[in-house]
Image (cartoon, helix red, strand yellow):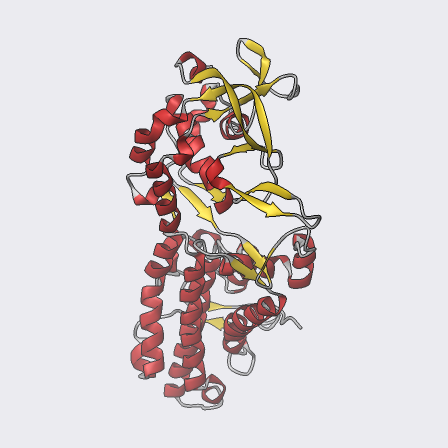
Length: 420
């Protein structure tokens, strides 16, 4: 009703190519002729590959062409659409103007009987994309004032295939209605399967439940967030998944904890309090490199989270954990545990403290990626619930002191079982 009262809708004759599958009219610039197997030629959308048909009817149209300047203003900050690649694409569309033709937002009720009728005109039914996009508001309680508790969204997540609808139509509708568009659109790329497009026709669509059964729900979640690079398509490959999960979760993180909590080196399951002084006690490049990595890890990971680069978060954590494993291998705690002198005991405590501190910080930082798995590890490391915040991800910020684990539990944790 707001759009209608403000004069942003008008009744007009419309003729053009309509894609039934995409539920949208397709401009001439986004059409191509395709030869079918029987030799006939059909027009299809270049964006979706779906066929189109010529249609003529009377529609209500939205004056999209009037909002070029408003959309430019919305896009003035490069952070409005992330990653930058998609901000540039959307900005070029707005500047070109081809996507700003006035938009049909209704269908005759005789052709689309089911749906919301146009206010004051029951002969027309509101049709995509207006009726679909407004669900973001109605699910929050609009038109009651309740929706304002959540609007505008700080981040709205979309796929790259619907960038035009959410980056052109949606903000224009909102601006026309006197409302604020989303602060940021996070546009993600797609998944391929063995480097091929995923589609029902190819029979290569991945079942999430089957994948979770094969790799565990924790493992699948880790892989998807670890490999989903926002600016380019990611590849789903079972061999690759096994390799990543075994190498990073089972070997790099799981093995580090096992080395530091095994009965041969830590029979009482102690978790020594870490200290910067351990660098001097161990007096090795490996220890110095690890402490430097731990001191920088929190800020590196935080910026990567802010930039929606979850893969960089995992990279940073794994680099630190690899430093921790190198430190453990260099100082050989299994040999130190066999020595009886005080200096060896100090070095052993330093190795265990730094190794377990690496695991603690790594688990806290990876918690948003795999909360269930990391929660189990943090429980095992006796990290209190009130010490699992971002402020606790800094080196020596556990605030827990020297802990003794339950001797019976010291070797019970199998963090992530290797996959075959």
